Each structure stands twice: as structure tokens, then as C-alpha cells.
Length: 302
Image (tube, rainbow, N blue to C red; front, side, top):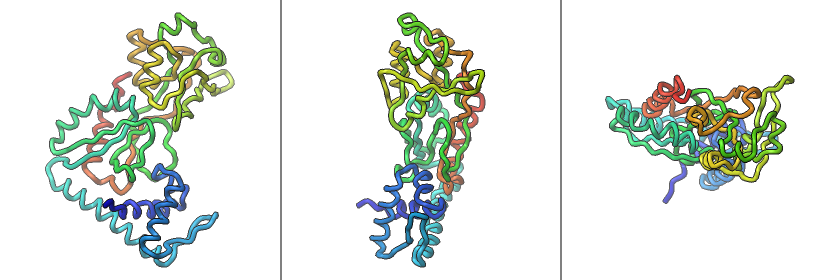
């Protein structure tokens, strides 16, 4: 039988710590309806009302205040217990669950796992590659690698390195269709686009004399997997705005050609490692993030 009591406690505390259901949903990376559903089940199981809800927010009941204090203590004790066991050892031990975007994970994280595991012989690592942002609590991840701008949340983040994207096409595409000369010309070219949670990346920024201008990419293919878009770009299907860690090596060996270089906008974004606040003292998490910071202090694709 699945025991969701600790999950319910974390959700309840997230609503309190975040100041509302919307903030809790951002913190946990879930929908507000999921937060409401979890709290409804918690109150039903306990047989008491923990909070009074309204369109303006919520107010804890007396039982809710007592339960909130107990939840904070229990969550802290669980994390401290795990941390104490790991700290007592001379090396990092236990299971480390990590999630990362498919392309960056495949291209940059996976090749660096062997050296990390060699440093920590008592560690077991579980890696999940997914272009959808995972819920760290519900999916039981210790660390998530996130690309781009972070949404406001109570997750602790550590910047790993800067992130830049470059507009590129394959020589085959250019031979068949030519090159755009200005960002506006992209309207006449097939562009490869994101589908799903990353559709915001279909707005391509360009530096112009009047400032940064966003061009909405259009084309005949959308995908939710970054490596799929890269493969189609390499096959000459369309133009792509591709992350530097993939595009720069392929540009250097002639596999891809940069486009609209004179309009290149600087992305004020980064690659981060994020984790839950109460888990920052766990050696397995701290050692992995320190390792990533060391590896990517000078990005290997530069």
C-alpha cells in the first residue's frame, strides 16, 4: 500500500511557506488543482479542517497550525536522519536521483557520470532524462538540471554555467533553400519548433538597431524532445535555434552553419541545478552539485 503521508506534509508546508496555492504549485512544479486535491485528501484522512480557503488566500485553523508545526519537525527529522547516515561515512553513500533535459543530459551529463561515481564508490545514481520539468517531491528527485530562466519558486538553485543559443542550419538545407539575410526573412523559411512546456523557445530574440526583437518561428514540425529537433536540423529539414553545447562543436567541424550572426542576441539565461531547501545539507546532493560546478566552470564546448 502506497504511503503518501510525507508527500501530503510537504505539500501542506509548501502552501504555508509559499503563502498560497499558486506559489506552492510553482514550488512543486504541479498544477493548483493537484495541490487542492492533495490537501483535500489530507483533510479527509485526518477528519479535520486544516485551513479555511477563499479567493483572497487561506487561513489556518487551530488544528492546521498545530499540524503545520509537526510537519516541519517531521520533514526536518527525515532529512536529518538521511544526512546523518551519509555524513557518518567517510564517503558519499546512498541513492542519488537526478533529472535533466534530454539533449544536455545525453551530451554533457552522461559522459561525466563515470568520473563522479569513481569518486564516490558507495553512491548509486539514478538518472532520468526528460524535457518536461519534473516535480522533485512527487517524483522523488534529489537534483534537477534546469535550462533557461527559473520560475519564481522556493527551490534552491546553483548556477552551473551560462546558456546561449545560436540559429543554425545544415549545409544541405542552405544548398536547397538559401540563407535568411534578416530576422524578418525567417518568415519565408522552415523553422523547427518546440511543442509543449517549452513553446516559449519558439520566440527567437535578435539584436537590432532599435533593441532586441522577438521573431516567432514557424514551420512544419514541432517536437517536445530536443534531440529530435537537432536530428531534423542535421537532416536539412529546417532552421533551429540550438543550445551552444550542441551547436558550437558542430559549427567548428562544418556540420552546421551559423545564421544571422550579426543579429545574435545575448541570452541572459543559464543552466542551473535545483533542489529542495531542506535537502541542502545532504552530502550526496552537495557533492554532485560541487562536481558539476567544477566540470562546467569553463564550459567544455567553448
